[in-house]
Image 1 (cartoon, rainbow, N blue to C red):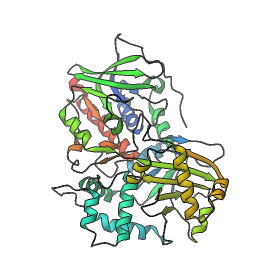
Image 2 (cartoon, rainbow, N blue to C red):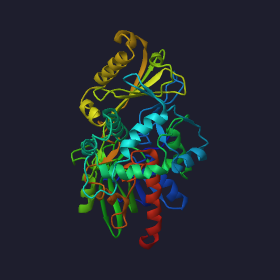
Image 3 (cartoon, rainbow, N blue to C red):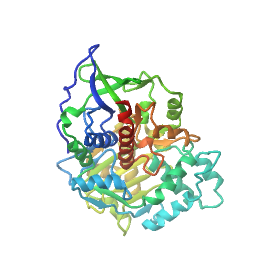
Image 4 (cartoon, rainbow, N blue to C red):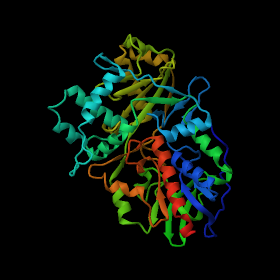
Length: 458
């Protein structure tokens, strides 16, 4: 579900005068579009520069005419009942449905939703959000190894690495604890999918803009940001022509992924801010872009259903598995299953080719369903995969807080000289980090701050 946008409607500069606007936004993902909608509603002239040839960012929905469901290669779930996301869903008239939250473990045990979350939450309840000396999640687990069963600790680690796409030896206990504390108001064990596909949310934002074809400029990679009391100037590379274009605004909102902001100057989509505040660089070093690998398979039949007499929403394997987490399309009955690995396991697999990753997943699926690998391959219809780690415009899946970084990461909740603001899931220190709801919420927050301070500098 996408709209045609004119990608050649900005002025080629290469030394000529810059194109002017009130507010310039870098990134046409959920955060950037949420900001643009709020600002445009107040009558401000907004421009969005998007490096990709599409909108949506890490929302990436594919449609296959042979499949009854949209294929999500990026964001897929709505966790809990976040008001920001459901406000968009309601305004667009979209349909959502509950995910079947039943869990089958590799030893054959079937857990209900309550049993699974009880195991994980008992461990997570010991996290300390006010801890003075931060420690890694691995250190936290080791300090509590006598309080919980090995399986409970294994589940907690697997959930932390999978859900946050984080290496547990680097993941901040304090950052995780702050997020978990905030999640008490959002029941993340309640999960939904958007029947129409997640990109319907992006379409809703685009249609809310007065003139989206003039507001969103695709194939523009921002390379240099300069600011002073006169405003903000951005130089961007036109990915189609190779030329440089310049833009001038009173305010700038940066919604680019942390992986891009941390990238070295030699990277394709690297961005530099001049002058660069020391606090900005320190804050970047307190965050990391996690690695997660997802592969979606469609087969002739849902042969994994024979593993249990109970319906299976999620399959969990041991930590040694290449893909320790799998989920089905239930309650929609279709022979589609998704393989997932995040954190340490994904780090080990990120250098493999697409074909090697697929082969490992198929071999594992054959083993856990007690099928011959050749038979499993014979049943395969289609494979869908996007490599977010090697995508130059994301360089990872989503962010997490590194050990010792919980306080310095809050820099992104503020602005640089009331000129440059930040939004995106990485700027959230709450349960919404790493989610579309976090991106939308942060976009609204940044737009609100711009509006609050705009008139005094206009």
